[in-house]
Length: 285
Length: 263
Image (cartoon, rainbow over all chains, first blue to last red; front, side, top):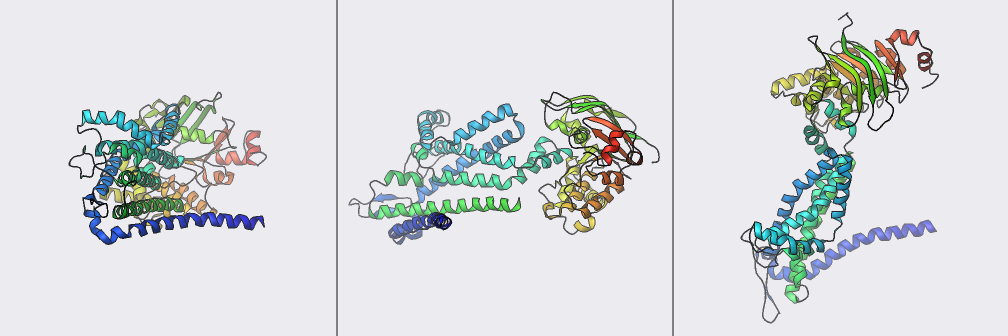
């Protein structure tokens, strides 16, 4: 009796998550219909985001937020991947316990800081630094990209570190026993062995960077224009949605659902790929 | 070949692990003869693996261990060096190219069969493709695994069976033409048939190099080795020709161990 109840309960919980996923997709898809019919594929390449005077219609395009999202994520990844790999390698292979342990804990704590704190810190402290060193007016693509990088580095470094730590000791020792240097062991044994986990961490971080709203809303400038230089302000999909949701109606609202659908699909593909890599690793190991 | 030349010589060697109060090895004296197989036997924790791992300084991957005494390695030209004097990474690399090591579990690298065997050669600076190919083939033949692998050199080494992987690891070590090859219980993770193949291979290898093997398997020690060292609680209890150790040991302790009264 108890067993059956428990079974049904677990079954329900498990299927619920699946229905939620499908349900959210269906809602986004339904509400996006109006914009999809109105603009079609041109939506992806239209720069304008202008409501008519009467708020009944207008021209809405996803080009600027899509480009803004992609560029800020690209900057973040370009900075974060090498640094996170460096941290992970340092923690697994180079640092002594006396240094490695506190750094490891600090990394995990950094990963737990809410994104609004990164946003505030970025706006009040970091943006002026960017302004005085690189130029621009502080907020913009570069500032958002760098702070995004700082946000995802701890996460990426922690997962990569765990993946590298799974390299069997005896495998490393046998590379050293062949006359390999520490660098060669890292490059030829540890990196290939933990490839699955490392790629997984990168893809999960990518998903997080794409969807990050709060910190980017503070830092990207929220301007509906294609950036001419790396320090120019622009906007991103989550930021545009968060800023406009309160006032939007009808076609604009539908266009925002369209944007949300695009972000949903892209993130879904990215997370599924990460999942695939993690699973692939389990099967092999 | 008939002569009993030393290839390594361990003298008054003591070893203390980082953080330990007591030394794990106490004043060990053990000769390693050229083109012979020397087996190290003894109950778990007697220090045989610790001694083996000192002979290529693999202990030095972890800091804080203490060495005393000396371990001489005799070069082909007759000169000798005390490997405990080595300090630089470069010197360790040279040492490990001369004193190779095979581990308990097969440890193929996550790369192709060819690249596994070529790995040590590439590290030692050989870049010429045809030379690499020649030496890889020779090493695979030497490790009696050429027939099974010659059509799949580009495939991942992880697809081989456990016994094949271990022979690949031996090929990988042999490719560097080491003077000494250290085996740390090389068959403990293998089935009897693979074990037989590895033992046969080790016997053939002594034509080319000198072997030191740590084993828990007394039959293996008596089948394979020319000399046997029996270790107990960090001491070298007895060292002699294998026949002597197994048929007529001079110490009661050795006799009790090989007859299975403890261990």
